[in-house]
Image 1 (cartoon, rainbow, N blue to C red):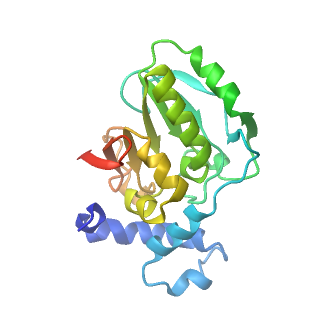
Image 2: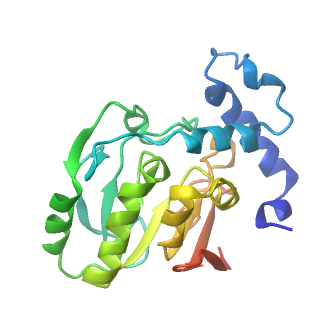
Length: 220
C-alpha cells in the first residue's frame, strides 16, 4: 500500500475534481478526451509530467531572479530558484504567471552556479515554480552541484505527488532522488489551510527523503 492509498477518499476525489477541467484543456467545462477517465488525477498527471519543458543544453527557464535568505520555503535561510512553466493550473494559484512554458527567460546553469556561490549563510536551496519537475534534468544538475560544492540541503515543491513522480520515473524521479525534502501535491483551494508548515492545502505533504534513494523517511 502506497502513501496515497491511506489518504482520505475526500482528499483524493477533490484533487481529481479541481485538476481535471484545466488538465483536459478542451474548454471551460472540462469536456474532452479525459472526461471519461476512471482515475482522472492519476492518468492526467502522468501525461502532464511526461511533457518536459524543452530548453537548450546547459540552460534552464526561470520565472524570476534567484532569492536568498528566504525563510518561508523550507527550514533555515534558503536560496530559492523560481522555475517557469507549470501544467497543473491549480485554482487559486499564487503564481499563475509562471504557467506559460514560453514565458520567463532562459538562464545558463553555469551562471546560476556562480550566483549561488555568492550567497553566504544559506542552509539550502528550494526549487519553486512554476513546476520544477517539468524541468527535471536542469534542476537535478543544480541540485547535485549545490550538495557537492556548497554542502546545502535541497528541497522542492511539486504539484505532482510522490507516487506520480515515482511511477513516471526518468528524469523527474532522478530529481526527486537528489532531494532532502519534497512538498508534494496540487494546491486545492477548498482545502486551503494557512496553519500548515510550508504547505497551502491539507492534501499536500512535507516528505523528508533519503538522498540518492528517494526513500520517504518522515511525513508531515
